[in-house]
Length: 596
Picture 1: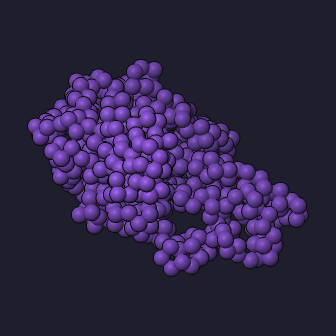
Picture 2: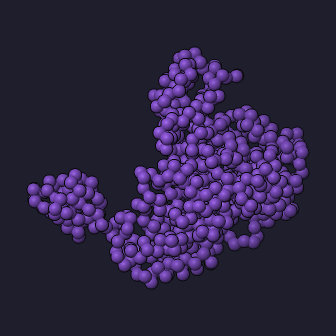
Picture 3: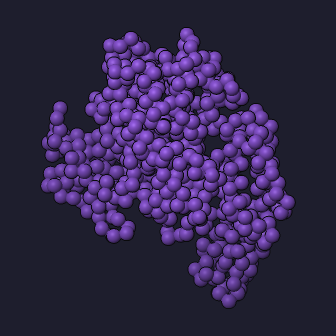
């Protein structure tokens, strides 16, 4: 059926949690009421990326971009926009710099410096319709590989592209494929790592939700290139929508002869099955992931042998993450040279980041390698919330480090971030402002790592626990300057001696914050103060006798009865009873209570 217009509605997890499915049903009902259901199609797509302004509704072909839409807006959109052709001003994005409405998403600052390759179909197609995927050129690259290229030329094209693994390691993808291709065996495997355990990261989930067929295609291409007939997707069970859409894509691909025996009339056979993970962070490491799929504990093993030589059930196995695979189809269709020209000399292509934290435009962004942190945070990200001052940005999740204002003009690529004391990781980018305490941030990430350690090696199991104990002392004002020396020496030792990459990078948040925010650590130790006012053990609430009028509002809300004083007399806080909850400060209407 041919439609005159399409109404695209974000159907990613974030927008679905904000009732975008209800918006879609309301839109269909409004169209049916006007007799337009055969002229206008409503499509639940994948993530548009601009999560801060979701749910998003896009009207095509006019390319009208509506933000923060509610189900109650559906009737007005149909009546005013679809029927009369009028833009609904209250639903359009308002540029905070010009205070003017913007009709098209591409003209928003959020999108202007982005270049979508991995996310090329997300928000553009119905992820549950294989015909729409094929219409967006998915499976064209598979056909090209099977009928116009040899396995060797496929590997060489990926090598030429310079694509490096987007899961955090940054190893050259073509080289990895080449290793697996050279190892002969009666069975080989292609594994897609969809575990994605970094706090705040949702790149891989969004790709699987918005464009699952591109991953199915890429895994088949990899299977052809390395001589594998079985593909496995290792995905955390906490991703129900991604699993549902991936299962649907695999089923549809089989029905259309794009998976299974003799694909597209060739001699190549390949199929995919899904393996579920329980959400263990360490299973993002490829050897731990493989052990988990085999039914064993998710623990890493030392390399060599690498999975390309002895992986799943001891057979040659190639492991790439979702975002890495998402680039494969575009590379084969447009050529490795095309991809190589994007980005930097040693880090080609684009990178997807989950931009979160104290940032105005929370969302999923894809930018060419070499884009600076300043461009991502202050242009695409729209700057810091509530006019606060930028303090740091954490890249690489629990395995990364914190970068400061002095690092904002650093071009983002694998090597530059490592030189600055951080790393790319899978693409988490959390922005921090002046209200964040850096020792507390380091403790937060280390607590996560300690909890997620598989416990196999002593440096990670015991060493990180000792680091966490020292940070507890720092944030409670009980540490000494010698403890800071221990943080550094022990952190470096753990980096050098841990078994896997996760243990080796666990001290990064500490080492980077101790180096770049030394004065803040010293303030906790020597002055017994938290400059950001975050560490409760170092806080003290006091009542100014000059401002207190004895209204008793503070005393009435204090849960521990720590405030004494009669009506219309000055009040005082008994520090031994105070639990630093801040309820008194919130209740005081005269600014008489201060925190320091």
